[in-house]
Length: 419
Image (cartoon, rainbow, N blue to C red):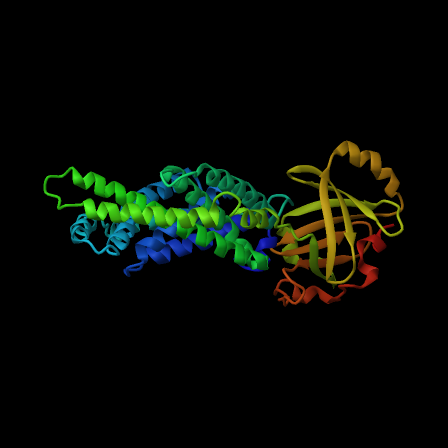
């Protein structure tokens, strides 16, 4: 996911990421190499995590097909993982057990029709998703979800008290994996998220090996009941010894207070309350804007010397919304703190803004916002950026109307325009 997409409204960001992951799923299913099955399974898991958390409108059939796909790949991939573990043991019975596991491998070609159906359905549903109202960004939604997922992981880790707690350790692994998938898109906007994702990957690997060894121990136990099985006592003892060794590592690195630094850092990730945008004066309203979604805005500024609070009333087809905002700074990057408020609070405070108001209609075209002022002859265009040095590509529909850039020009700051 690109840094600028983190600034998109949550529903659009989720749709974009879902389509990106669907492409990865399709690409993995089209391959024939040894890692294709693993990559199909990972892509499907990432999609399921995204859909459960962000709830893009993919439809119930896609959810069911992804669940079926996860089940279809589970036994085959588990067999592959167990084969990797069993061949690491120097025991005569290991070769026999490996042949037994080889029979569970699944031909990826059997899964491709299901993958194609999922991807086609998702593309039809998500290609046209648009945000209906201004709301929280994909970043804000993701941070809220990662905090909840970090709390879930902390709880499951607390349930792992001994090497026999295999079910609890497996649930902790799943919780860590889901948290990692939710955190991964934020790497584009949060440098520290990269290190945190790597930490979760290490946790996942440590708990994953412990899980595989527990499953392998169960396989050996089941095989012992078969009259044709070779002597398995030596292999069973070696697996149990390795379980104890692996649990000691998990206990040292992740149990008790060991994971707290990682989890606290994830929960401490904060939304960047810095608005980075460029503003342009236009000669008129672009023709493309007339068919775009629009919202009517009334905004006024409360009296103040150093701090000027803005009240805003938004009206569109979805109804009325009210906001309180404080902006600090000038130029490309400014601090912005915003929160919703009630109609009652807005109406009580609105008279205080007399003489400091603007009235405009805002049209949204992708990342661009076009403001047609209704109380004066003025049209402005703004684009929000992921960083101050991100280049701005003026689209063809906008360039004929462009007069000049006015970013940082105090004459075009809304507070100064208000009258």
